Amino acid sequence: MPPPVKETFEAIDSPSMQFLPRQQEAPGWRLEEDPLVLRPGNLVTYLDHDAQHFLDYGVVDLTVGKYTATAGSGFANAEIFRFPDFVKAFGAYSTRKVAGINFLDIQNESFVRAHSLHIWRGPYYIRITGSGNGDSVKALGAFIADKMPPAPGKPAVFSFFPEQMRVPNSERYSAESGFHQRFLGNSFQATFDSGGQPAEGLVVPAASRAAAAQIMDMYRSAYVHNGKLLDPIPNLGEDNFTAEDRYLGRAVAFRIDRFVVAFSGFGDRQKLTDLAIATDQRIIGTMRKQLVSADKAVEQAASKTPATTTRPPWAP
Image 1 (spheres, rainbow, N blue to C red):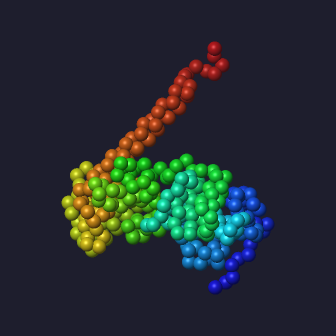
Image 2 (tube, rainbow, N blue to C red):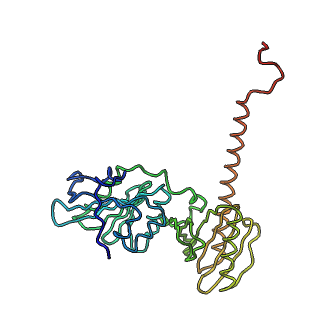
Image 3 (tube, rainbow, N blue to C red):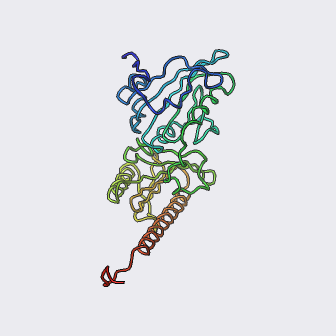
């Protein structure tokens, strides 16, 4: 394996540099050496196979600072991944949410797992590995995140999902796949608990209605070849299907405009149907509000336009 790339911030600059504490600026921590800034082409030399995950979300650069505790034997490796926008940063961060994590109160969202701290903050994903006394690693992460501009909230697509049955902080954005299917990538996902029955849901905002219809056909075909289709649901979306398979589980999927929505689980199909219907209604409501807002904008523009007249401009 090639040796790590030795690029200093004097050679390559990044906006992330302003967020890394210098010297002993962060209480309890001392910066050991000049930070590194790595461009996408050099990520493999530093992250090995893990680099592809960040490249899938269009990472702009990675800034790394190594710290030593000023008391005791603690150490921390702080990595700031910078992305073009907060949605891609959320995706790179959120797909790392697996079992055995505890969420923290650092905004926009954060969690801790064994020996690592993960923070999503606007267009940045902060990952800190190491150990220290008490909550010192968390304090270092909070110190860094506090300097960053926050995102206005989670991606707006999540508002399509019903909130009542959604598991808190389960939202994810995956560029790679959904339900282990690559054609369901670029999807916004969440976990639900419907009366004690777990289920997974996703929304794929396709580029067009035709693209959404193609995704629906591919998902439907997966069940045709491996399981069986069940009766469709009346008045759900513009197209829908229900299906079941011993390995893929049960599914309820529908398309409305350019959005593909699907729910999957191994429990009662009716629970999945209820989630799908609730989501369909929320999407319709959102579209209706957008249409009303567009109509109002047109009316306001028309009211500001001078009325047409045949009077010459020089006439009183």
